[in-house]
Length: 176
Image (tube, rainbow, N blue to C red):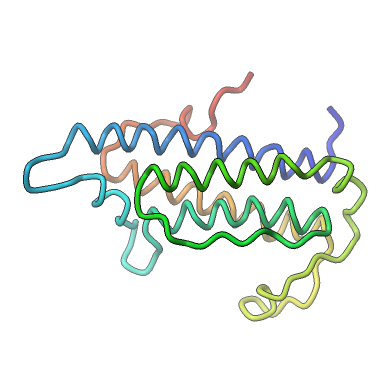
C-alpha cells in the first residue's frame, strides 16, 4: 500500500477508534463485575480522570471521535459534521464511535490524496496555539494525529488506572 495522507491518517485513526470501542466493551464488562448495591462502577469509570485538571473518560472518547471526523473532513476540504457532547453511558459512547466511523468511511482516499500542501482551516488552533494556517501535512503530523492519540491513550490510561484488565495488545489491536 502506498503511503499518503489518507493512509497515514484516516486508516490508522479508524483502526484506533475500533480498538477504543473494544476497550470500552472490556471496561463496561469490568464495571459490571464490580457493581454493588451501593455503587455503580460504570458511572465511576465514565467520570474518572487521570488527574484533577484533565477531562474524564467520557470527554476523552468524545474528543477522540471529534478528532477522527475533523481529520476526515478537513483533510478532504469539507466541514466536519456536528455532534453534541451528550453521551453519559458506555452505550452512548459506543454509538458515537459508530457514527464517527460511519462518517469517516464516507471520505474517499481520492478526496485527500495529493492535498498535503493545501491549507486546512485552523480557526480553533489560532485561539489555542496562535497558528494561523497549516497545510494538510502539517495539520496531520503536528496537530491532529498527536492530539487524537493523546486522547485515546488517556482514555486507555484512565481505564488501566482503575484496574480494567487491558494490555498493549488491546490498545494496538490486531496487527494482521
